[in-house]
Length: 200
Image 1 (cartoon, one colour):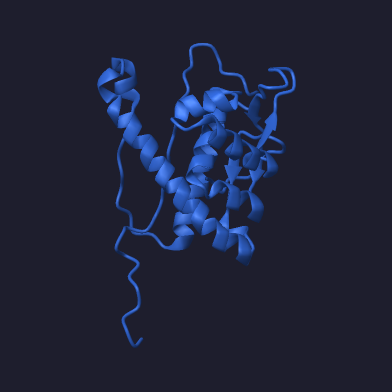
Image 2 (cartoon, helix red, strand yellow):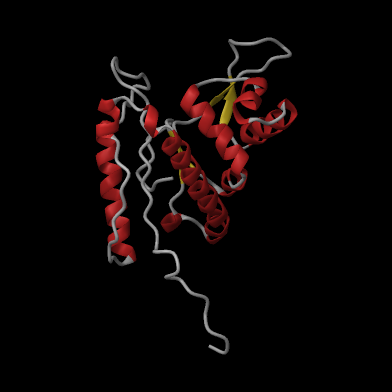
């Protein structure tokens, strides 16, 4: 999730319907898998995620109905449909969203945050297997900053601009590169937002 400008055709700015589709954790994982590993069938998705093929097919159909994935016409047979991600990245910017999108976006944001935590947990389990050069390049850190919402939004946009410089817009991985996940989260320190006291 990012608020960076949306390049034509490569990224999708999520509307209310797409936000609803992706607010489901399993559908978010299916879409991430297609973006990370390329086209797959329901059977392959089911094996990768440990679910039954019927459930994988259902979630693939929901993603397709939301315009988030498309069928790969040159692969498979009538019984075996291959699917691929329709876009490189999903974008949701609450600052430009309608009131309805903002409410739906809360559920989506929660799902994205949970997925990021799960991905970090899986990465942590593989730290012992990392080659030395990747261990030295890996960054797992956090910073406690004191910012207002405007500062936070500007920082987010500046980070997005840096990431854009390293992105391969041709869609092809350059020789000698490996897929790297950069997770950026900026959120209020948990416990900062407290419910109003009774009677106030």
